Amino acid sequence: MRLPASAHTAQPWRIHETAQGFDIEDVWQFHTPGAGPDDFPAFLAALEAEQAWEHSGISGILFRIRWKLGEIFGWDDESAGTGARVTSLRTRLPADLKDTPVPAAVGNPLTGLYVLDNEYAAEIANGTVHSVMHLGWVPDDTGYHLRMAVLVAPNGRLGRLYMALIKPFRYLIVYPAMTRTWERIWRNLAATTR
Image 1: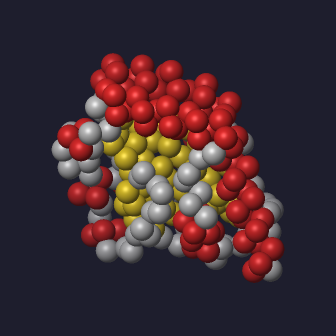
Image 2: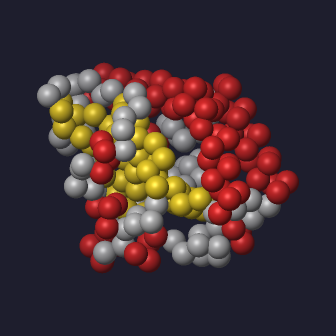
């Protein structure tokens, strides 16, 4: 379920200290029925174990097209990434966040920045954008749920055009497919641990 940007900004996330200058592009909520306050690390580990970052079906086709376009136009060359075109946000992290262990993301094109008991952030940079995926564990009146925010610093006009062009695909195909996958992973995890 899509949420307004205020759903992200109202939370006391540590990412706010680091991602100044980034626009909040998307905020998405995933249903995790029965989740408790201590379940975030296990859910994050389950997402990693199941390589939840990989896409299949129509969503997978869109990502393969995107990677091919990146190859053709040089968007994903090393010279367009972190450490080259942009400085990694790890350099902005407070000392206590720099020391957190970050899971090795199998099949995930993003590079982890930090992980806490209720928060995870990872980044990617290419010729179009410098982006952060932030996951947070949020309490509500039914328990806890996963919330994802996508923060973006577009690379000039190309980046703004790129984000505008992919917006309908994100909302109509990518995020619904991601929601089905991530919520299934939660149900499987909950069924084995409850």
